[in-house]
Every structure is written in C-alpha cells, then in structure tokens.
Amino acid sequence: MSTRLPGPQRRDSIVQAASRLFADKGFHGVSIDDIAREVDVSPAILYRHFASKQELYDTVLLELACQRESYVEAVTNSGTSFEDVLAGMTRIYIDSIKQNPDLLRIELQSLLEGSSATRDFFDNRWKSFADYIEFGLNERLPYDLQNREITILSASLMFQGMVREALIQKFLQPHDRLEDVDLDELSHELVRLFLRAVGINKSRISRKAVITA
Image 1: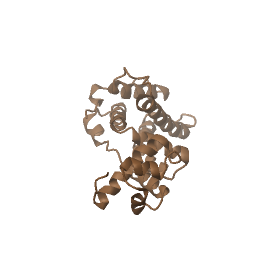
Image 2 (image 1 turned 90 degrees about the horizontal axis):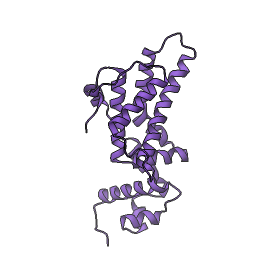
Image 3 (image 1 turned 120 degrees about the vertical axis):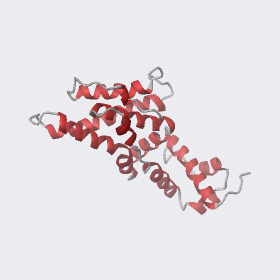
Image 4 (image 1 turned 135 degrees about the vertical axis):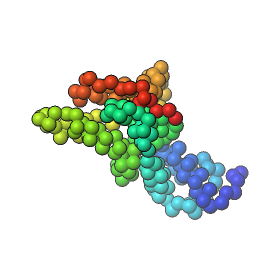
C-alpha cells in the first residue's frame, strides 16, 4: 500500500515515474495503468493531478527539456582557446547524460514523435554548442571559403550529431562499444575529429580542458 503523500510530493513522484517509463518506452508504449502501478496509486488518484496521459507527457517533456546546462565552468577552467572551451563544454554535457541517461532517451523520443518540446531541448541543451561553434568557426575559417555560411551551419549540426551518437553508444546501448574509453578522452577525441573535419588541423587541446565534477 502506498504512503499517503502531500499533493505536491505525490505529483512529483508521478512525474518522476512517468519520466522513467516514457523515456524507456515512448508515449504510445506506456499506459496510465503502467504509471499508476509504478507509483503504487490508483488511476483515479493519478487523474486528480493530470487530466490525461498527454498532459502528463507534456509535463515530463517540459521539465526535462528546460533543464539548462551551465558552461561557465568550461570557460573559467579550460584553456582560452576555442578548442579547449569546446572540449570542456563537451565533457560537461557528457557528464550530465552519464548522471541521467533518461535526458537523452526522452529527447530522442520527442524527436521521433514530433513533439514541440524538441525545440526546448535544442534551446536549453544544444544551442550553446551551436552558437559557440558558429562564432568560433566564423573567426577561424577563411572569409573567401566557398559556401562559407552553409559550411559553418552544417559544422554545428555535425558536431551535435557526433556527440549524440557517441552518447547513444556509451549510455543507451546494451553493449557499450566505448566501454574502455575514458570520458575525458572521449570528449577530447570528438573535438579533435570535428576540428580536423572542418579543416582546423593544427589545434592542440590542453589538459586544462578537462572538467572535473
């Protein structure tokens, strides 16, 4: 029998349970009964807090999508170069997914389902990368480069895809292909490969770019 909780705590417990289930199975793979069993309450109690499964799902997406990363530490603790700061930002983001892989799961679910929360995930979790990369490449790439604007925009998308795919392999797959790869080295290697791909070949990432939790 479930413990009787005050209204706000009960609501929070429902959102946390729903978050785990939606992240694992998506919106259509989870029923209200599934969530009620996870929280150990009746569906009637759940409906006192949320009028529908859609309302609960929207709440879960909004709360997760609006978790914003702070990259101040990457700027203050890393080297001063574009490469070092980008490596520091990447490590901070990797650490956040290591601590809560459901953030990535639910983001991928929202992408597949075409949810409006997808924009919030980008604004709060990826836009800092996109803005910093676009600023840095605008400073580094030759101004007479053909299709320069498209190259810069495409590069920021490429880095986002590289990081996301590495995180999927590292934290969401049943067999971790990167099991023997240290997280510091993973973040550094992603940045090295990215810089090489955009033609910045003489860059060195300093050890100061390592961010400690």
